Amino acid sequence: MQKNEIYEAQITGMTTEGAGVCRIDGMAVFVPMTAVGDCLRVRIVKVLKSYAFGIVEELLHPSQERVEPDCPVFRQCGGCVFRHVTYEAELQYKEQFVRDAFARIGGLDPEFEPILGDESRCGYRNKAQYPVAEQDGHLVCGFYAKHSHRIIPCTHCKLQPDRFGELLEFLLPVLERCGVTAYDEQKHAGELRHIYIRQGYHSGEMLLCLVVRRSVKKKVAAALGEICSAFPEVVSISESVNPDRTNVILGKQLSVLWGTETIRDTMCGNAVSLSPHSFYQVNTPQAERLYGIGTAYADLHGAETLLDLYCGAGTIGLSMASRIGKLIGVEVIPQAVENARRNAAEAGIRNAEFRCGDAGMIAAQLAEEGIRPDVVILDPPRKGCDKAAIDAVVSMAPSRIVMISCNPATAARDARAFSGYGYTPERVRAVDLFPGTAHVECVVLMSRKK
Ligand code: SAH
Image 1 (cartoon, rainbow, N blue to C red):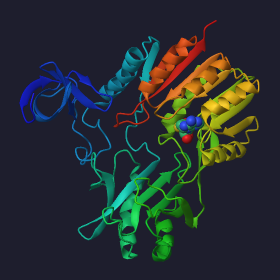
Image 2 (cartoon, rainbow, N blue to C red):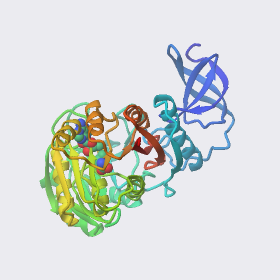
Image 3 (cartoon, rainbow, N blue to C red):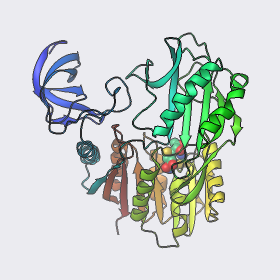
Image 4 (cartoon, protein in one colour):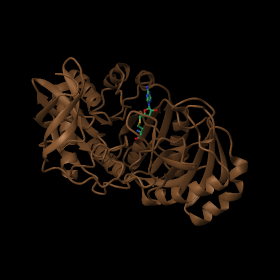
């Protein structure tokens, strides 16, 4: 097989990155923006040892799953991979990702409950960070093109609430009038790097954070009132100065230009306060459903000790706090632990304790102290649980382990490790928190063999 050759093929599968798969001369060829069932002519663009990449040269017979994409920049933007198929098809693909991971990586055969979709599909994100550039003498913002830092201007992203787009369209000319310049990554010059917006789903409160290379405080001072009267839900305007050449968006220091530092919201009925730095699930109502499934799997009766490892700002454990005797949360980032403590205090929760440190180390300490949680919640980052964390959890012999994961591959790997210690995964449910993208969460219930 050679670059630029053209083959006829049919898409028969979907990769976890959201590219269609076809087989040509025994090779797997990955073709983005296709649907299972498509018959097409594929142009080969890159050939590796056992697989290749192609692009659609001509669509001969479109799959039944196809729909007209509802976004004008779908083909350029690196955000969504599924806007050209029905939501039913997207959910099927995602459920299959989870099933395949458990079968192939985990060698496991748990009971699968049907994937829980997010029927809203659009406008579900509560947070957006738009990179800024200057194009044709004007400030523009939008999203990076796939595998690049070229900005595709887009103020009305389908994944964001409409109000975010309205705010951007109001804001860009205002900032231009204030003489704010766009950051130029190549030259490491200019000012405005990103516009960061976050909104409480239940409260409606919004924060606006200007991420800049150097302060624009003086330039924008006179315009703040204008922004807040046009958008009364904006209760916080801040500036984050990030002077470094880096892909990290926020700088270390945050200064409030208007209003409060944080916005308020509720998660599973508990009050939370959010700053630009706080980790927070981007799809609030669907995260609440996800945690609801976790709660059902945890099967709580009122007296349990619950250990919430990788707890972030504590939202999962806190959502269960009224159904248990004691909550212990563990998280490595000190600011997140502070947030968790504050969230507990604001929600009036008194049976919660949070410890800062590595999940494996703290869990081992807890085991040393003789703490024996009845239920352990694990919500690790994409790379999954460390072996030390798994060993420490097993040594505490909880009756149930509920793993919530944003990466089916590591979830399956870790479930396999637990099953080696007598914790058989009983139930798995995929939950779609990120419609349009290839990401999928899953909840896994593991119980100790009697
Ligand atoms: N459960 C939280 C956050 C989950 S994200 C929620 O749903 O909101 C995973 C969390 O694990 C992050 O907050 C990250 O900071 C934390 N983390 C990553 N590595 C860790 C480690 N080795 N020990 C403890 N926490 C860790």
